[in-house]
Length: 387
Image (tube, rainbow, N blue to C red; front, side, top):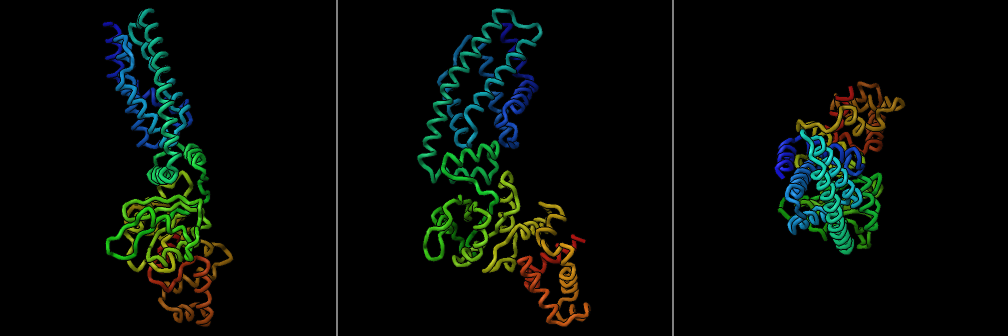
């Protein structure tokens, strides 16, 4: 027993062992390869605890206690909630057990044959027990989540916007079990009351945003949740086009992000939430919501740019950057420099009506009116960094 305890003390004191376990799990179990830093921290903590417990069972010839089993069941329930496949979780434990036995075998001096046999027997028995307990807890939690489908869908979106997921594949499978398909391309809409009365959003109000103005049901593929005083909706990109009218009619304002990929929904949410936090009052308009371009400009003005200058220019100016529309870009630049359509027309040698027609074309192509103070600012910033 003394030799076993000596080896145990050395392994649990060496941070390299846990790091080796985590690295092996990430390399051999695809569901763990794309985990973000917050989830990796949890994996490291579980690996350190499990290593300590299994080695102690080896030293004492013991078995898993009721407290151990409760913890393993809790881990399985959490994995069911975040959509990580159970087979991947159990494979991760088998990989970890293999690394642990390799580390014990590499000890100097190595354990004798009886101790090595005891380690193998303990590992097999423990893996068998925890596999049964975890599979049962995982199945029960999955059934509970599926039974409470609305709550499960809210939790799915909560995990998406918080970045709590192993991979998009796992989330897609999780959505499929709930009868939904993640929209791709998508629009992430964050909405809040336009007034300053402190009234927040409820889940019922968030779901109500999906209904059409005549009270009929709207998009049934969207996901909704509430964060603080704001509603968060994940919509198909096409459905996001009707957002300005829907919000304006309900006395709301919002920010719609549609330029990020599915694996960056958490980034899209932070962009939208930060935009609503920092946008001046005149940036909001009853007939439009803030978009990716507005959010990127606000991030840039706040000293925390979330995109490159090229990306911001493309989001704001869009079609104006095409070679065949150079005349529209010249009209915009001159209008911004002179401050009036008449002055811009004189500088360009155009009739004022021709200049105003070009400004209308710019508005139609970019959905930004150069005469609106906030939209003029975003256009000015975009054309400045474009050059």
